[in-house]
Structure formats: C-alpha cells, structure tokens
Image (cartoon, rainbow, N blue to C red):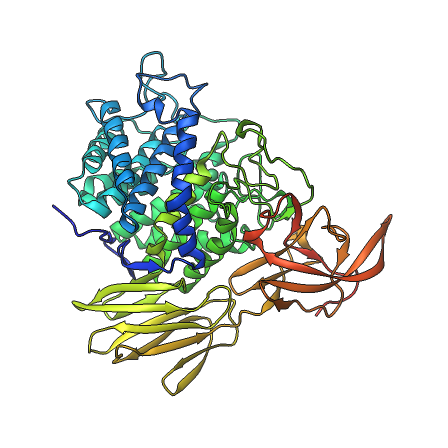
Length: 626
Ligand SMILES: [Zn+2]
C-alpha cells in the first residue's frame, strides 16, 4: 500500500489533474517561496509556542480538561492544522526535529483516542459533556475533519502505513459508525468534516468515507440543528446545498461546506450538484466579495452580507475565509478547467490572504478591513485583550487563532496550486517563480517559471525537459491583463484573457514570454455597492493597492480627494498619485492644496507601525474622473 512520496490524490471526475505536493518548487526569494520559507523557519515554531502557552496541546495529555482555561471547544483543531502544516512542510524541507514533533503528537493522539476511534479533548471525558451532545456549537465533527486533513497530509507525503494515517482510519470508521445511515441523523454546526472525509477516502481508497460525506451534504439545510440566536443560516443549515443560490450566513462555514460538496460531486459525477455550486460561487463573487477577494461583511455572525453590502470600513473578511475561498476555487478549477477560478485564487492569495499573514511570520490579522480609520495602537497588549474583529496591528495570537494555523497549512502546501496536467498537456495557472516537474505520457516534463512576478513583467516560461512528442502548454492570461502578448520563436500573439495554448513539439531550452500589463490601473466597483460610491481603487497586476498614512504624515485617510485626470504612476516599489488636499465646512468640501500620496500593496499595509489606510479612495465631488 505504499505510495510514492508526495503523490497527488485525484478525484474520479474532473477536467484537470492536480500535481503532487513535491512537483513544484518555488524560488526562495520570490513572493510565495519567501513566505513558504518563513512558515518553515518562523511560523511553525511560533504556533508551537502559543499552542503550548494556551495549553491546547496539554489538553491531549490529561484525562479531561477545564474548557474555561484551555480554550474553546474547537481548540483541538488548531493542533491539527499545525500538524497538517508540519506534514506538508516536511515534504518540502525535511527536518528531524519536525519529524520527532509529528511522532510526538501522533503518540499523544493515539493515547487520547478511544477504543472506538473517537478523539476529542472537550467532550466525553470525566466531568465533560457527553459526546455529540452539542452538534450546533461543539465542533466535534469539525475537529475530527481537521484531524483527518492532517492525516491526509501525512499520508500523501509519507504513505499509508504511517501511524497517523492508521489513527485516521479509526477516526473515519468511527464517524461512519456514529453518523452513518443507522447512526445519529445529524450534522456539525461547522462544516469541515465533509471535505476531510472525501480527501481521506481518496487517500485510502475507501468509498465508505465518501458516502458518509455525501450523506452529510444531503442532510444539511433541513434545519435539524437546534435553532440558535444566530439562525440556521449561521450553520448553513437553512437551505439544502443544492437549492442555495448565493453564499450566506457564516462565511467560513459556507465556504467549507461548498468545498465538501464539490468533492462529493467530483467523486460521484454529480453534474447537477456541481452546476449548483458553480452558480453559487459566481453569484457570491459578483455580489458578495471584496476587491481583495475577501468575503464576509458582517461582524455579528462573521457572515456574508446582502448582495452588494460591502462596506470597506466594516469588512470582516476573515483570513480563514480567504484561505477557504482558495480551497473552494481550486476545487472548481480542477472540476471544470475554467479560468475564472484560477483568477479568483490569484486575487485572494495576493491580497486578502497575504495581508492576513505578517511579514515577520509571527503575526496575523483575523479580520481584514479595507479602510482603517483610527490610529489605535494595540502593540504590546496581551492576546486576550486584542480585538480580533479589527485593529491596525497584526497580533501574535488571539483566543481564537484559527486564521494563523490555516494560513500556515495553506502556505506549506501552496505548491499544489500552481499547475495541473491533462492527457495532452500542462497548464500553468499561477506564475509563482519556480519549477514544475511532472510526467506526461510516461515521460518527464520540467518547466521553469522565470521573472519577478508580481513585482514586474514579463513572465518567461522555459522548457527544461520534455517528451519528443507534440503536447500543449496552457498559460493563464489573467482577467485584469488587457493587452497581453505571448512570444514564442518568431511569433508574437495578442491575447484576450483566458488560457492561451501553445501546441508544439517543444525542445529543451525553448522559452515563451508572456507580457502582462503590470502598470497601475483604476478599478471601479459595481455601481450597486453604495458604500464606495464616489470612490475608486488602484490595482497593479494581481495586487490591490491602498493608501496608508502614518501619524506623522501631512495627509490622512480622510483629507484628500482624487482630482479629475489623475493617473497613478509606478515608481520603484510603490505607486505615486497626485491628489487634492481638502478641508470640510459642514457639507462643503474645499480644496486647499495639492500633494502626492504613495500607494502600496494592500497586503503590505500595517507593516510600519500604527497607521490609517484605505483601498477605496474618494474622487473630487461632481468632477468626472478619467
Ligand atoms: Zn480564522
């Protein structure tokens, strides 16, 4: 039953075939390669320190725990996401101490696991609530799902005989017994176990787990969870998965649920379910997603707002929702091969996800506002005092620290999102500088992605090794890249957005050059987004930019206007914009001078100390811009 290291796990049905975690290597100094190294060198140890400090690993050591002292019901999941990140990272940069850590945690889990496979530190022990007595808020299935995903990471990188995978089999078998056709006819308040069961079923070749996931998907939306003060939509239990037309309720829950539903559809060839999910994704992207790719505009329930309710200064836009949206778009990309999903992955990664992760590798945002109005300085406060709903400093940890472990596992496995294959070719979806090594028709293919993307163009694709037969290389032309061109040999083509394909008998050393317009450009919101009417944003390549102001700056987030005809100009490392300084006199706005401001990538904001910031910038009243 042994697998080759870092094997991909492929769905039964799908347009594209994913690559193994080790097939792509990112350049160390590049945007994402650098972040992968930072996770490896800093973030994993940082997470370990905090898991220890919070007592969340110690919860596994003893028989029972005091929930009030040792974290919320879902704190086990942070240990599992850390474990998953460790496992993925081992495939990239093997390390003896990390290997020992994985073995240690596996032993802890083995000792905690009950004879029937159940593992959880908050339920079922002496003095604790009984198992599955609080499906709405207990997060037991959610935690089991994250444990299974850690097992998948381990299984895909070391093989099925690993003790962690064997432990996972007992967990998954228990879930099928407890919640199968003859078990509890229930679901978890927080979806997650659905995709985990499918992934684990694919890994182990067990259709039973996939059938259980399908059962969970079909059970949801029938209001079987107890009614809560947040309503059934909070649990995505108000409308059946096949009938919901747009994402609503708690954003991360809704996104995780759809990930599991796509996994089920891809296994069962369920085109009706897939079609419903595609339509829901599109409606959500068009009406309920921030320009940063962020999702969720309501703090009250961490949820999606109504259509076009996207206030920048009240964006919740949880980092986890950004991570989940990448997972969701990736599944749809594999299932359909449609470019819009790869575009969405790029937007979310470079903006909301990158912003959520501190450049020191040891801090993060939980919520990702698009407009920070105050200079509140929270540096130095304890984790317990920090408001995860929004501030202008990234925190080292929060009581609820789902986002940091989520980003760590995503970044540790980020190479999986770069390229795919079909029977006849290779598709490059993301231009992360690095190399792609895979097999086509039994022969090796190696491709280098060269350049400084996203800092500047062009993207160069060099064929280092390939079969002597004719095959097709597909490159994504992003939806934002008007006027793109591809040069290969003597030929240069003007390209519309979408995949550009080159079918040829390539030779080692061949190079293709994709020129994308990386110059800053204006972006306007859908006119129905009332909260940013009269404002414009600037993007450059895949990056959303923002205007950031330190206390010492002469301009502030609310004292400038963009005059007619203003053009954002690229400079070294930033973008300059001429603006009008304004003062207010009741409803009147008076222009009192001119100055230039600097725009920086949104993901980089709050890296220089307390600041105010805005993505959507006001234009001069009554003056048409352009
Ligand atoms: Zn989170």
